[in-house]
Length: 178
Ligand code: 5GP
Ligand code: MG
Image 1: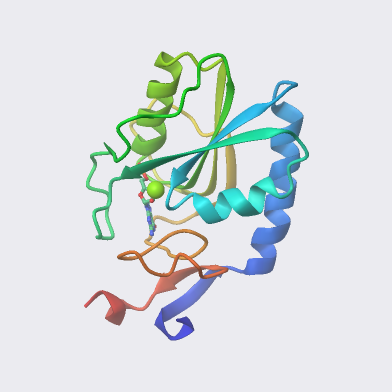
Image 2 (image 1 turned 60 degrees about the horizontal axis):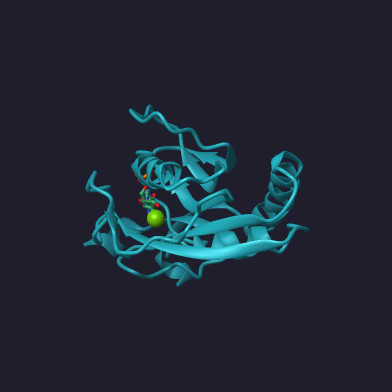
C-alpha cells in the first residue's frame, strides 16, 4: 500500500497526539450529560474510533451513510443520504463526526436535517479541513488539521473504496489514478 503513496502529509504519531487534545477540547465545551455522536460513514469511522477513545463521557453512537464523491477525486456537489431513516436526535446534544471538511455540503445538509429534527445542540468535528472558501452557512467547530486543497487518503479517507486503513494521511501517486 505504501508504494501507492506519493508522500505522507500527516504522520500517525501527529494524528494520535492531536486527537487527544481535540477530544479534551470537545469535552470541555459539551454540555453536561450524555452526548449523541453521529458518525458520517464510511469516511468518519476511523477518526471517530480514534477520537472517542479519548473521550471520558457517556456517549450514544449512531452512523449515517452519505455519498458525494461517487468514486472520483472531486465532490459531485450533491450529497446523497444513503440511509432512508436517520437517527432520532430530538432533545439530544449531537456531535457530528466526519473525515474531512471540503465543500462543506455534507456537514451543512446533515446539520440542517438534525436541527429540523429537534437536536438540542449540534457541533461538528472533522479530522481534516481543506483550506478554501466555502459557500455554506454551517461552521465546523473542531478541526484536527488544516490541509491544502488536494486529494488525500488514509485514516478513513478512500480512493475508490481503498486506503481507508492507512494509519497516516497521504497523497496518492498520479499513476494510481490512471
Ligand atoms: P464535503 O465536500 O461535503 O465537505 O465533503 C464530502 C466528502 O467528500 C467528505 O466527507 C469525504 O468523504 C469526501 N472528500 C472530500 N475531500 C476528500 C479528499 O481529499 N479525499 C477523500 N478520500 N475524500 C474526500
Ligand atoms: Mg464522507
